[in-house]
Amino acid sequence: MDIKQLSKSELQIMKYLWSLKRAFMKDIVEQFPEPRPAYTTISTLLTRMCNKNYVGFDRLGRDKQYYPILKKNEYFSKQVNTIIKHFYNDSRSQFASFFAKNADLSIEELEELQLLLKSKIKKKKDK
Image 1 (cartoon, rainbow, N blue to C red):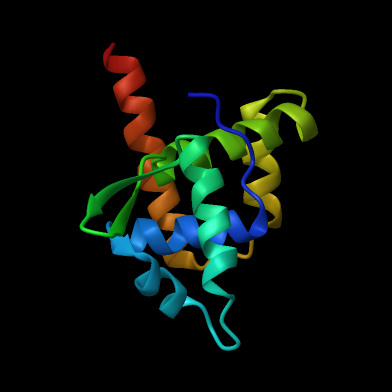
Image 2 (spheres, rainbow, N blue to C red; image 1 turned 135 degrees about the horizontal axis):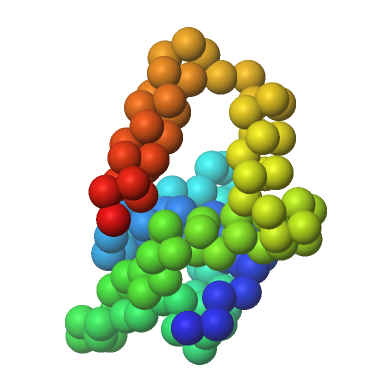
């Protein structure tokens, strides 16, 4: 699937669908803070997202129950890889270095990251 960057509104709908798993239009609209967007706006966006194969639906009587086809990790991975390609000369190590130097991580987060890296290194060595 060719994954393009979602608009701000599309991404917000996807976040709600990833959280809800399955939802009717009213469930999605209710997730938005006040003032909520019009049903017609959400309907138009959902139709576009269905056409892009990011969202699917099951027809239950006259209603549609929507569900995400696009996986959250798949989308996020694609966006991070695009950032790495365009801003870090396609170098994951440059990106990781920038992240480590500039992210304000707590001691716990740094230790968690350290464990993750050690585990990844071990798996690579064991291959």
